[in-house]
Length: 285
Image 1 (tube, helix red, strand yellow):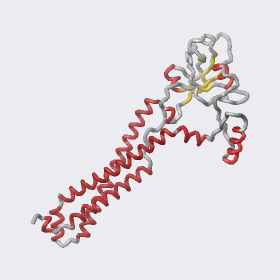
Image 2 (cartoon, rainbow, N blue to C red; image 1 turned 120 degrees about the vertical axis):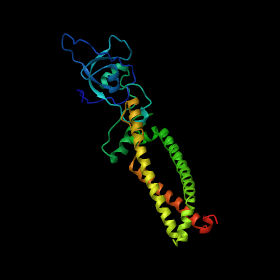
Image 3 (tube, rainbow, N blue to C red; image 1 turned 180 degrees about the vertical axis):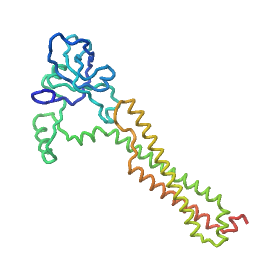
Image 4 (cartoon, rainbow, N blue to C red; image 1 turned 45 degrees about the vertical axis):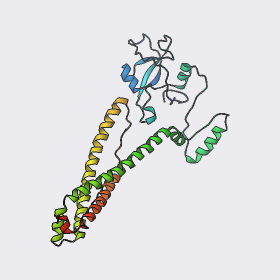
């Protein structure tokens, strides 16, 4: 791993200015340089490729900057908390980072991979008891604490979804009432031909269910197309693989079932309202 005796890599974000100017000509004699990993966006913007030699310094324009060879390119993680950040990232060897920032043997944070859930509790207790003012957290708890903003947004979207569903159900009921009311003469003719009210209600409910199912399927297709367009646009803007919109199987099933249930219920209410009126009254007599 990067030729380090201790095989340690920095995984935190490096927000220091990077002087990523490629050296045009190779040195006259072989010089051993360390390798670093650069953000793929930085490589694209600065025209740097794997194998190029760059200067890394804490201050721009530092002529005594350390030389390093680009050994890898880092793709941006699909993390919602990093989308709004525009700084570039770099991974260096630990001793390189110490010389660069002049931080000595101190660190702000580091990550430890535990062997399993059984050893995690003991590891946390050991680390927390090693020094005063030092605190270790499980990665899952850190994810929950750092995603509180997204939880609020999720609840807000859920509230909007509930309001939309209630409004759509009321609108669907009104539309079906109007449409079925326009067919009062057809219903009256069926009643005078001896067709029972239960049969009329069943046919109206079946028709409403089919229309609701077809409408929900069209809505699913429209949602998939819009989701892909949104992802294509914002993934290109932010240069990330994060999916901004998702159309999951659970969402599709929920939408179709809810649409059919609301359609059948609205059709039943409208049909029952219509068959309760005498046939001659439906004919306007």
